[in-house]
Image 1 (tube, helix red, strand yellow):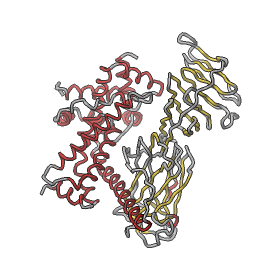
Image 2 (cartoon, chains in turn blue, purple):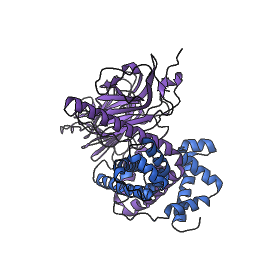
Image 3 (cartoon, rainbow over the protein chains, first blue to last red):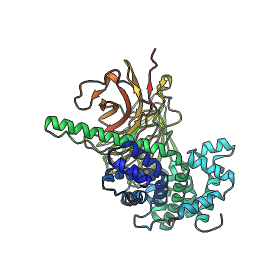
Image 4 (tube, each protein chain N blue to C red):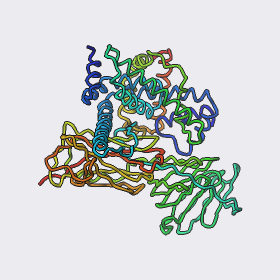
Length: 178
Length: 391
């Protein structure tokens, strides 16, 4: 039996440890797929957790046919669409914030399946220093002040560097040169 | 704000470096320009994907958070079922628990109640600062008690019997050493902001007021309640209510549990829950804390909304579920609580406490909105668990 199916079946029987392992085994890919769809870090985590809670509730209906990853991805798509519809509604309210305005429309097409692979390739083509900066910013969560202090540069210069890297990656992912 | 300026501002927003004063202009630009929205959305998706690619280490935290949530739900369901079977009645339904986004290292708890402020009276009051678009850059006014009020360019503010009425623009207020609590009030159509500490700013655009606290504490009040904003806090008030965010600031005092013997497992997480209330679970496995006489846990939380009860839950390996509650917790300030396990009560009977020798393997803290009112925004974190050293 597929290893994820083994965990899913055990979790369906109420085994919390198995569900814990299922989350660990699947969360990275699921988070990436959700991030590419919804685009707002807070919302990514929200959708991710809603996905797993919905999955826990629906485990007894899951048939172990080797498609656990796809099953979770389907739940994530549904949860993402639901979250984006909530955001779209909030745009009509005076409390709408920047994150509401930049949320994709719920009916917007799904991102291309190889988007993350292209991003990985584009990242790999960056100089080591640039990759390190992105790791510290996005992996370690360092803010501009911390990055500036570590590099001896002004935070404005670090912000510009990050902006240039994002522009470069966006162009690369869209099909340009790395 | 031109599209180029908006893109630049959006980049700063992505990096958490957008000034509060720039926020309205960027929102307006996004609302008016679909092409700008699409470009910024694409950039946000890229940034989110980068964060996800680099965030593989968060997996354990996600799994632990979910485990806490599911254990809490299971324990409560079991307790309710058992209780209902004994009594033959249903207990009042509590809200569903749902821990959401969390950020390691962020250590604050916030709950905010919806607030609706009454509009100011329409009676004519003197305009003390109305610079207009071509007016002076700012207007500085002296306050009783030694403070100052600075009106930004293109601001209109009136003095109304000791209350400052901001019709348009933004003011920054610094209360003086002799101002006293509540001595300075800035009112807009959406909110009344009463100084509790020393320095804050109020921005007013049509239908929307933004309050930012630079230092001290400000009570933002409406007809349905109040939100206490500490240093670093920010609230947006409209006719529909107030949404507030009480950020952890680097200058906040270190938690006292650092002086204790450390359990070893540390639950640091922030939870943002837009609907009802906040909750955070911490799985102590494989640590398993054995209870001795005098074993306690330290908790640090901060509430921004009118939360009727703060709850701390623990589960013992024999299947017992225990709860400690604090009713009507204070708002806006850090609450440091050392809770003895002997103060926990059985969730079902509310009588006995976990006996010495029990082993705790899971804990959970939550805010509860028992009144049925909606918490508009909440963030919760626990800085850690400590057990006093046993002599």
